[in-house]
Image (cartoon, rainbow, N blue to C red; front, side):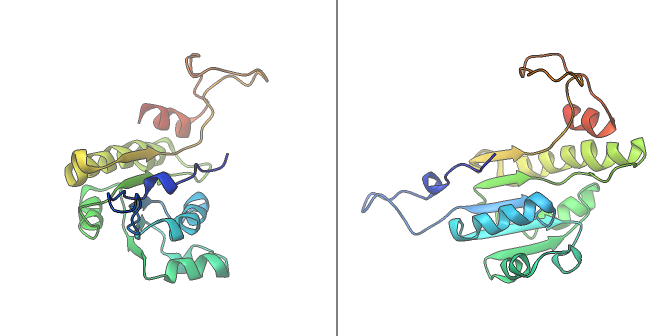
Length: 179
């Protein structure tokens, strides 16, 4: 699926209908596969992009174009472990208070981990992030997006509705569903 057109996110002004002020983004997990592409996409549609990730851009296997995006002055990176409250506090202290959009892509996605690794890396991380997003931005935030993948339904090859009963296949899906 493609991302929606973000031109409606520009701030309006009475003088001419549009401003050159673009929104501010916070992307959690911004160095991951989806995050790096999202940062590239948003670069010319934002005034600043704050990225919090446990993996730094220097070791995230970015291609040359993605590495250049992460060097742009509008991109502000902080390395942090969002599983801990201390990591969240330190990371969120580096982010402006007037963020417009928070997009959470951060989660444990490596296959074959133990159940506690998924519980902490998905559920605890999400709880911590939500707590700090609410505390720092509150009602000023325009939108919070939690993005994930998972296997919620049976393996039947039939379409499902959002209202269908979930059949959680693994620890990753169970904890994302719970989050």
